[in-house]
Every structure is written in C-alpha cells, then in structure tokens.
Image 1: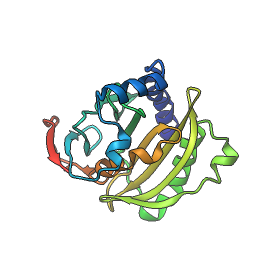
Image 2: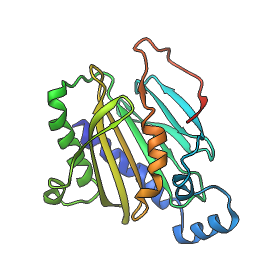
Image 3: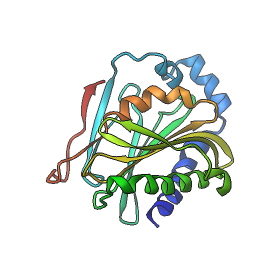
Image 4: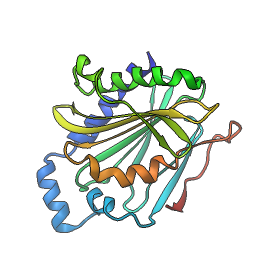
Length: 223
C-alpha cells in the first residue's frame, strides 16, 4: 500500500534528522551560546514577514515554500516511483525539526471519500511512530485547512529511532485536485515551536498547472 511504503521511507528520513546529531543537549547549548542560527522557538514568537524560498516540483505536482533565513536543507527523495520532498532545520538549530511533502498527482479522491482515506492514512502514520494500533485508532482526527487544502489532521507524540517526537500529520486536497500528505515533526515537547514554520509553509502549498515544465528555478518571496 502506498501509505505504508511512504511511512517506511520516512523512518529513514527521521533517522537522518534525529541521529545525525551526536547530542542534542550539547548542540543546543552550542547553538544558544554561539547564536550560529536562529532557533525555531525564537522564530515562532515572531510572526513578522520573513523571506521564503519557493520550490516548484513537477514530480509532486506542487509548489512548496520553505524557510530561507536560515536556509532549511531541502531534498527530493524517491521511493520506488514516488517523489517525496523533505526539508529540515540547518545544523546547530535547536530543536531540530523537519517537514515532508508528498503529492499524488495521478490520484483523485471524491470529497465524500476523503474522511475515510484520511483516517486510514493518519492512523497508519501514528502506528509507524510506534503508537500502539489500539491507541492510534482513538487519537483525535480534526478537520483542518492550509491554504487551498482542506482535509484532516492528527497531532500526537510518538517514537522515532528511540527518540520521543511531536508529530503533526495532515491529509487533504483542493476540490477536483489530488490529495497531499504533509508531515512535520520535532523533539517531544517542542511541537509548538514550529507552528510559525508550519503556517508559513503549509498555508502556501499550491498545485502546479498540469502543463508545468519539467524544471523551474527556485524563487524567493516574503511571507
């Protein structure tokens, strides 16, 4: 199933995020003392306009905005025939955080079928973060919208590679458009610190025209 395969691939991405740093405690102190980069917590408290980077990704059928200052590290990874766009905080940022974006350009979901699909995908996502199946099935799933996307969202605490993490998952679409799966995660207890990052990015996810060219240069914008 696509959702299960996608989440298996995400386990590798989470490993990169959460284990590449030898000690988050030590690195947090270094980041604070040296002020090498601005922390997500600081950014979250400041809703002022900020420069953003625009990625146009024909393989996902999406335009995605990500942080420019400091520049979040971005990468398109491929699992089988599907592309997944990943971004994560730069080195020495604390808490480390990441987001992933998956488009399904060839899939169409009727509005009445979206709740059932979202429940299946979000519950599977929680299970893949080591949430017991019986618990995952009872986690709150709430209506949510980001920009043109309307769908459903789940927030929970799970485990990734032995590390407790706060997770937000969203599945939704715009009417007559394919579904989009969004994920954001950071260290447990720091979920609120990335709210502004999520707002600036997820609210600006949009669909590319179906005749979009194969490659687009990244752009910059203020949001």
